[in-house]
Structures are given as structure tokens and as C-alpha cells.
Image (cartoon, rainbow, N blue to C red):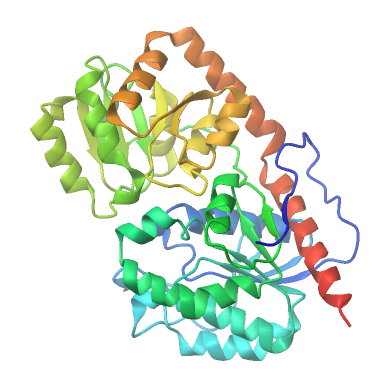
Length: 414
């Protein structure tokens, strides 16, 4: 593996002004889907937040993406830039092989225009836009940074489409990764997963996500959310409801914590029905509420505001944005060690980190729920840590440092 370095993961800074000298950069970000396609979870929001912060610091920040939004399409213009909070987003159609986000118009645009940028940042793997963006950048001699976004995890590869992924990795992703100017991970856990493959990799930069300040809470709360909040404060598991999130572990812990209530809220990634049946079989359906839909705005803030604590028990999580948002809102967090941002929870003493078993999860929940004062102190420490270190402006500065480093290294080559 190549050199590993960490870009400012613990430096305490409060100013959001760019610290990197030099002219503004011309940046192209390539991602298979983008806002308003929120069904795909955290990566959509975090990539936009990064791009918005980069644009706010004066860098030309363009995005190439598709209009795919589940079985349908986002209602956006095609082939022409759309301003999304200062980010110039160009959407391209994907009419066939949509699971790979195959888009010949995007491919043509990449090969025609990639040479006009200082750097290309590619987000995700296993998908056609990643392959095309890497090829186009190499064709034009433009350095590219690749963010696997937690998709190169041995355990997840083994559990789903193992043979297809292994062939794709060998033929396409390994060359893309090895020929990148740098790789970006959001946690040391994700960096260790990359190291485990034994490839000859470029430098790996670990730069965590940022988090936005929460909006002012309103009162327009939906009836299903209001019903879920009736009763004692509950443990909140917020985020996409899919098998990777390990929510079955959390449900299995509930019989061991008879005083606890649990709310599972977020877009349904195909797991909500199975979790409801699991809760029924375990006899805890009356203490578990499932909200399998997009939760945002006042509904989201009400859930965070009234929760006792947040829980994330994923099989693997390159970061864990929902738990990070909970920290920003002053909630104590329970995570497994497989969640990337558990490193920050540990540093801040902002919650408990448990083994990935129902018994260990139950003990962790019991500890947190039994002592409200200790729980609130954890929440305060976590909030202070996030505010001091993880605003999106600070993250954009660290990412800009990475971009300038790899651009300078490319220009220094004979």
C-alpha cells in the first residue's frame, strides 16, 4: 500500500476562511446520483455539502451526475448546468443498464471536458460513471481523487454479489484505484479496509465528513412522527433502512432492555418489512416504531430533539453521518466499532462503543438509559467536538489542501 496520511482530523480550528494559498481551483466532481435523489442516503447529501463549501470558498465546482432516482428520474434539465446552492450540476440521462448508471452522454462530456479542470474527484465504485471519469482524467493527464464511499469492505463484498464484485474489482476498480493521484477515506476504519486488499495504492487521505448546523425547529410535524414520539423518550436509529445497517441486531437487543423504546426512521432500503416481522416474533412490536420513508425538516428535528439517545449498529459504515448529526444535536451515541465515526465518539467521550452482538448492544443501551445526567454530559461533549472541528468549511479547507498537494505532485513530474 502507498503512503497513508491524515489531513487535519483532530486539529482544532474555528475560522472557516480558506487557509490554502494559490489561485482558486477548477474542480469536477463525478457521482452516479445527486440531489434531489435523496433516497440513496448519506453520500448524496455529503458530496453536495462538500461541493457547496468548496464553491463558497471561491473554487469552480462542477458536478456530473445522472438523473436516476430509483425506478424514475429526477425532474431536472438534462445536459445543461443547473445551479444548486452555488454548485453547477449537469445531469445526464441513463436509459438502459440503470443499475450501473450507464450514460453515453455523460461519457462523451467527460472525454470532451475533463481536460479543462485542475482535478477530478470521483465518488463511489462498482458503477459506470466512476470508470468513465477515471478513464477520461487519465486520457487528459488530469489527476483524480477517488472516494470509495465505504463500498470496499470485505464483509459487504462477501455478503452480496460476491463473484460479480470480485471480477469487477479485478478488472476495473483495482486499476482505477492504483492509478488515482490519491484516495480519500472518511475514517481510519475505511483506510484499513483498503489496506487489507494488499494493492499498490497511491496516498490515502483520511478526511472525515462535516456536518451542518441544525435548522431552527418548527412545529409542522407529521402525524406518524407525532404518534411515534408519544410516550417516554426513545432510542433513535436514523438513516436508510437496509441490511448493511445491522438493524436486526438492534431489534434483537430490545427483549433484553424491557424499559426501552426504539424508533427506526429513514428511507426503506428493503429491510423494513423483515424488521417489523422480527419485532413481532420477539414480542417487542409494541415498543418499536418503524417510519420507512424520507424524514426531513421539522419531522427530523423533532425526532432528534425528543430522542433519549442515538444508535448505529451497522455491519460496516465508512463514517456514519446520521450518528454524526445526532452528536451535533447533543445526543449521546451508541455505535459498534464497525462504524467509522466511532473513532470520534471515543475521542470525545460522547457515547458508548459496543461489540456487534444483541447482548452487548443491550448492555450499552441499559448503561446509557439508566443515567440521564451522564447521557446528557456525553451529548454535550460530542456537540462541542463537532462544532470545534467538523464544520463543512473546515472540511473543505482540508480537502483543498489534498487537491493542491496532488496537483503540485502531478505538475512536478517530468
